[in-house]
Length: 317
Image (tube, rainbow, N blue to C red):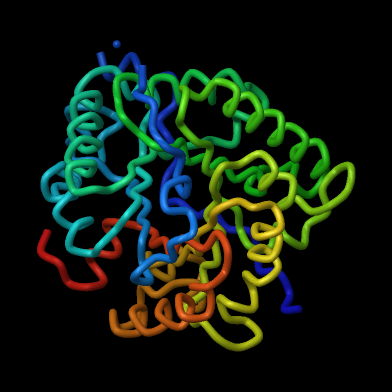
């Protein structure tokens, strides 16, 4: 087995914390969890899912804004339809039911759903491990009044300094936080979790692997495998194989996550398609898809993230 790479964050920014509420100025419908519908139908095309970390709100209007014009709801939905996406993880800042973020979130969810896309709210901060009620507050605000299929947790405990000195304690707190979040979900909304492939090799407190412990709690998972080639001993298929096998054993639907951000953000050119020709991304995810399409629970490839994917293919701003 190839050596495990340095743990890296899979997102370009953290959520705005409770302080953003002051800067901003203050019952989800029952739906199927991702993967529950047409569970035995394999995806028709490789890329089915996308992380969206941006919104179209100018930062000078709201501190939680990223000011990315193509994240305007109609443009975002048109892109998802053009790419044939079935699922979008839509970043929800802190207090997403407050201020100008509120109507943007609702409009984006509605526009995507009108194109037949399942939408989940996306977020997470490592400090939530010590205060699980913050995760609950976040998801309640993010889902309030919006028809979403899932909450996608991206908490990344391996980025904490204590990962090297108190890994068992951090993992225990992570599992506790996931349990608290799942217990607080609106009826019919599933818990999705982003899981780096190497957690299938990491021992969990009490036995088994960390990936297995997460899979036992999740309704769907994104197996994050940020590598820029499908085959070989250090390719997507080999690196993700153990996590895929553990997801299959747990009976949890999964996607394979790939990166399109810059090498500087990704931690090196080998971890991202961001410095490659778009045809390389297309060809490599097709190889992944062909290899996994008959695997129980496989739900396609997920791309991180909307802005950099558009930039990679040269889409107009």
